[in-house]
Length: 546
Image (tube, rainbow, N blue to C red; front, side, top):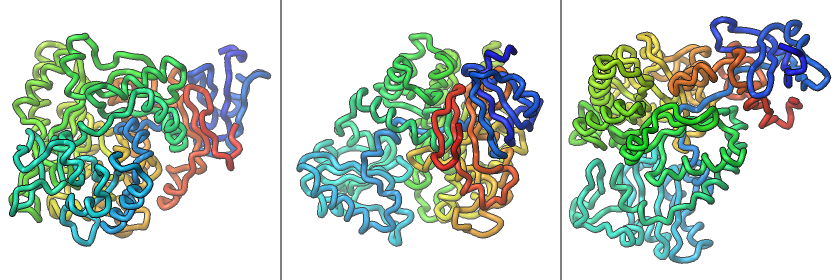
């Protein structure tokens, strides 16, 4: 390549390429938005010219840009303005924060919050509307649980939504009720949350665009160069907002958008298929929900919860309907992206996907990149089925260490043997794609890699071996699941996921080598620079990069 075409050279580094043809190098050359060459310092430095930006990495580590394979980035951007309850240690603290917000908010205005977790309280019983009534009687209040599968609301919110004792549970949803009176307690799960959320004023697309514009730098600071937006509202506000940023030249993250099941018919009629779009914004597939979540005790299980013998969880969609919708999507060329947490939910969607694969192969249709989101607990009989069906396991490592105590309480230790089973899934040949599920968990890739390789929390719990240590994976495997894994899941492994000539120049500079440093130091590894399309979009002020 002629020297005048090289815009950027990074040399004197430890380059983990994730490319099997050349796994390790010391220097990279970039031309425009793409990687031009990878090799030794001597080889690459000869390609420069007086106009080339040359960066001495001084021994720092360079890896492919991180791709969060499951994130609700638009929601995270909007919810930055909500009450953050994720660090509230007790019910009393949450009520105090709601009370404080009520004092500074005009009466009648909604108070919204995120992140409360009854499983972490000393009294793990569900909270009630009367508790919120006492601290905010003149404001409708809606608080999202940590897993975003339940809401806690006050009486005024229920009144505005028209939810009473006569309101039936919607299909795939649950309204918790007082056993003595039948009145709603103020705690609603899964599809029932929509009964109240539909009356909360929705942000405009313009407001979402502004929120995303402000949120992008936080993603770059975490080393993210791409995201898989795991769903959208039926109004498709996230896709609309991303398109506006794309057209204005302000979209600085590469977005793979998954559409909500409610819009499947529209996309089928329009002929839109998985992969439609460009290198900045494309359609990934269609998002469905099989069940709920562990924290809300709505994950669908083969056997009842250990501490609730009458509870098997919630089927958000019945298996027969899922089968019909899955075939409709596949026939239209839309890949399936299906939320399944409980072992029953995973078995049901695997049964469905088996039928889908049989039809795809029998009719000679493209074998789409179908994926299951979370795959948090499997029955041993179902473990090999993802690989056999070529279904991607889209998982979130931080969930394992965040949920471990709760998982054993609700599912029992025996079932947890195949909870968050990364090692077992890899051993049978499953493709892994890692993400965060933000805003449920932070989009902290270093924390995710640490959780994947140690199965420990940052404080070291539950001990040196970690929780269910047989499911630990190697650092290289974890790094691959944040780079090539998501690229493969979206059918983009030809342009993303590794530092390979011809691919997009999306890269991250790390303060140290996470493949060789002591495991505990992975957490303290800093993102010193993030490069998207050959452009440095983030620099650590203390690192003096570029």
